Image 1 (cartoon, rainbow, N blue to C red):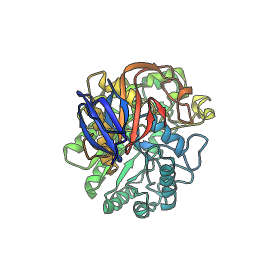
Image 2 (cartoon, helix red, strand yellow; image 1 turned 90 degrees about the vertical axis):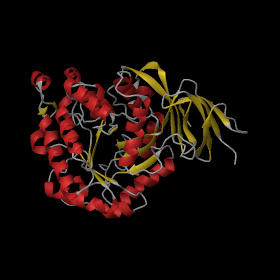
Image 3 (cartoon, rainbow, N blue to C red; image 1 turned 90 degrees about the horizontal axis):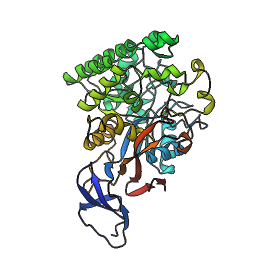
Image 4 (cartoon, rainbow, N blue to C red; image 1 turned 45 degrees about the horizontal axis):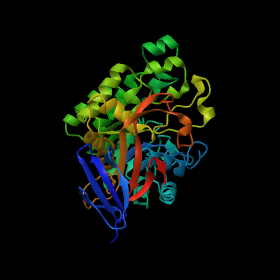
Length: 429
């Protein structure tokens, strides 16, 4: 069989330069001075080769909010960010709470072809927290759903949460909880603390997140099921998760890029670009989250890519939508917050942004090592340049990035999905 690509002199996980021979969707060989008749040469001197990134938490908005994002536009943005797989959250319109809706999203992803799309199914019907959704039917559908979440809403009822955890055990599923005690966050606009008091904005206390996580790790242990905690944002949450893991319980957790880099001080501008749920927290929380990602207490980075149309953000803070886009900047932010600070090396980045999220989501062909015989899901990243983030230059349909005008390191040069380039020389293919 004819090889299609020879990637020359890539630094696999930041190591010494090696070549990768890609043939028929897989890595056929690695080594020095590889050659193959008829293969296209991809020059990768100075580039870091990582397994294709996997996002456990992406809002693609389709069906229902195609003005903000579509499966195609969102996966194009994902490819530009180095992702080869994304998990599409369920809070669409209609909600992804039936086999029919998750299959629709899955098929749209296959048709677009920019990355693997694995739908996340809702835990409850209409994400209303009252009745379980069709969990088994979604799991048995062609979409093969294994992650279930009412993200945007907390499964606040302990009985419903227990039933969900029990139900997903039958097919090795996981419940991904948006940890937010609703009664403690009524009218909340930002992190409760010194800055919110000074600005006169309603506070979202850390305990509203921590109380739900504490309850849910105990429920997961009680029924012997898998729990995943979405977008962890406080130092107290880290300690609860660390305790649960020390017991050997089946608990995993994610942190967003923005919670690794930004603090609630950003709200002083009253710019709704910094309005997000859970809110940006304190510098002490940021430090705790970075340490927890470094030591493995937090398993992975997930973008919580949340696109919104211009009118939803260019308004006063109190009525603005919550959320930030993040697919195209995630790797650069992790580089800035974790690699440049010495907290992670590139092997650690591959573990937290590819291997572990693929494992949590049960994606068998993703997050694999860059070795012969493995699927050729590959990201090539240039760590050397620094660039100013320009929202107008982004691929997402929405522009609500919190990094507008900020200087961040690096850029994704190429992304390969099963041996086929979705991005080459920094451009979509």
